[in-house]
Each structure stands twice: as C-alpha cells, then as structure tokens.
Image (cartoon, rainbow, N blue to C red; front, side):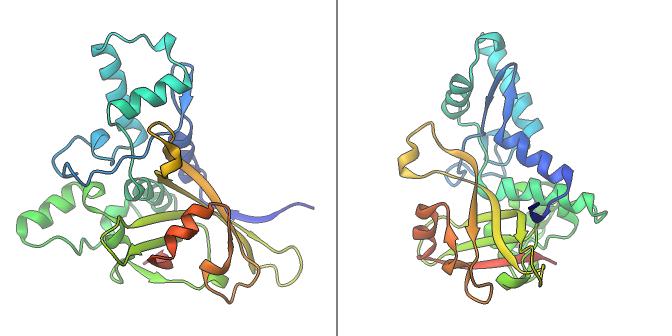
Length: 253
C-alpha cells in the first residue's frame, strides 16, 4: 500500500540533501556539526561559524583545498569529512534549520525567512541592523522558539515545516529539529499523523571526533493526543537528552 505522506517543497528537500550528501569531486559526506559558542557567529565567516549554506561551505572548502595543495581527485568521503572537521567547517542546528525553512518560505512565495523573523535578542540600533544584514548568524533556537516568531502545535496537527524546539532548562545548548516529512494513516481519518521524520545536526559522545553531522530520525506516533515525548524515537539518545529540556512542536508565524 502506498504511503500517505506530506513533505517539504522540492527546494527545501534539496537543501537537506546538499547538507547530508555534500560533495567535492567524487567524495561525498554529511556536513559535520559545528557549534559557534566560543567564536561569535557575527564576526566569523559563515563556513567557520556553523552558519554556512552549502554554497558557502563548498566555496570555502575549494579555496582551502587549493591553499593546502590537496587534489580533489584524491578525496574520499571519509577524508573529506575529516578535512571539514579538522578545518572546523560545519553547520549548527539553528543554521541548518534556517536554510531549510528559508527555502520553504521562498517556495511558498513568502519571500526570505529573514523578512519574517523578529530578532528578539537584538538590543540597540547596531544590534538590530546587524541582525537585519546577517539574519542567519543572529537567528538561534531561542529566536525560532519565541512566541513572536512561532506558535505551539499539537502532535495531531503537525505538518512538514514545523519544528521541534528543545530549550535547555540548565546551561546546555538548545536544539532544534526540522520536520521534513509526516506520514499519515491510510484508513479514515487520513489526516492523523502516525510518523514524524525530521532533519537536524548534532554531536553525540559515541560519534567521536569525525562522526558528527547532519542526520535524520523518526518519531512513531501511537497516540496523537499525547506529548511528542511519548512517541517512539529512533534516536534514543536524543529522547534521553530531551527529558532535560522544554520540548515543543512549533510552527513559524
């Protein structure tokens, strides 16, 4: 029986694919996870601040390979991933979410995402100007999860393009997942979600140095009236982490 699914637009799915299957020559790997907490995203090049688009990252890697006298022809998926990681070139979770949701916003004829985001962390004229000029660098998980930018959605109403935001109750890093596909039941009612499939980027202890990066997971929903945390998560370590966070499904306004 054919699956009853909804997905993001082809352009948004293409962005996901470019991060998950980043290619230089014949080498293909996922873009590593990179957190910019220590360097300040607003002053670094995007590729080094965890905020680079696939195009930004490709251009910077090409330049670095030339400077380092590394031939594209000798790269493998493994060596490319190691090169990106060693050069501290990667993407963080909010940067990834921004580019996916920006592509979806443009596909829906709403224009760029930056036009709709309220940069709630921007205080003062200079900070507001900087946020307007460099939106991706100044849009973190808390910005996405602010009530001025998104609203809480029940599990039963989830759609592709919604986000799962995880706001830390301690001093840990916030996290965000972008829902790119939703499966629904084949029998009536056919609008009840049975599985949520998401994209994010993260680093787990078991990943080691070179195993981090953009990945996907799924949450099986047996009761759409219950919390998302009561679903069956394919990433058990992410569910364990979620217990220390305020977790919500949210939709951009």
